[in-house]
Length: 456
Image 1 (cartoon, rainbow, N blue to C red):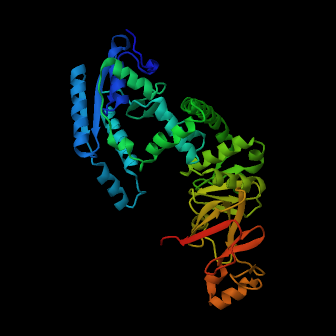
Image 2: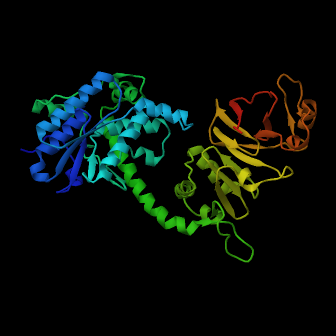
Image 3: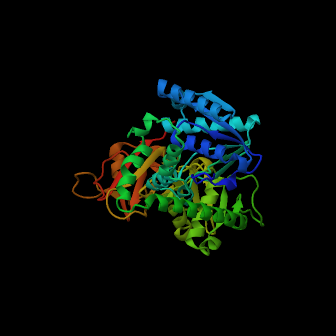
């Protein structure tokens, strides 16, 4: 009798030693029951794998016991392990790493354990029971965070690791179909009480935002899942296109007199004339590919700032982006380096420093020892500001002052001297100085600027 649950059996080849990630929830129980019911046709060697996250106390202990019993009833080998998710998340914070939420730590530990299983050689692949609902929630969550197309691709059907593959064969099944399938079998499942806690972003999307949006379009989940498929295929195409374009346009090192380029220099360069000949979509892709190779992931404003510098910038202009990429415009090239340009270039105080900042945007400028963020309170995004050292003739309007004052006079009153005086930073926007370190200026309508010193 054919199963009633949509499962992508094309991912499941005969002889595959497959571990089903079994949490005890409806989705994973349904996947295990579905592949077990059809295994006379699939020819798999089925295992079950359960990770106890050290959360929810006796409830999680009950999940483990339930999964053990289910696997035994189906006659499949059972793998189990325990981790302390909360302690792992705390340890990362103590080690100075980026703080993880409990959700993020649990996911990281879960996939690390799956990879251990694969590396052990008992299984060839691990299947997770992500559904169409999970896909829709993921795409919507990433859209809300401003993801690019690769983010909107959502949950991939297959993830390749050196140790083996993670498969998602149930992405076309809805949660309603899962529960209907289990009820028809008379198969119980476990409910995770944390799935009802609205402190978690995914739960708020699942229980509040998606139902509200579905009142406008009842097929919204289906459409979001279709968007993921389209985005995944678009990414696959662009990946191949970058393999063709990047070798032609990305150059290592710097040009040297007499021809050729210097070996061993950090960074990449792009000929701006050849970049300008590409469509905007290809320009963005190439810039992001260059950034990726340098270990950075610029967001949309940072990418547009790079593109604007390449298309419209003048020789000598520089840009430091908070995304971990720095750029310098020469007469013919856009040169990209990881981190801050100032640290790499070892500039002297007499040299002018000038960095573009997307509005809204953020910049880490080691040259000035500052991190700055410009927020757009009103008006259109996409404009550019310039962080630079002050120049003779610059004027500022101090808060509550009747007339503009020369920056030189303000620095004299502040008793700033020597190198610090030469490199005193200001931000120019629309031809006016709208920020100066150490003083309070009349605010620019629609803009807010936040500054903080970089750690030593």
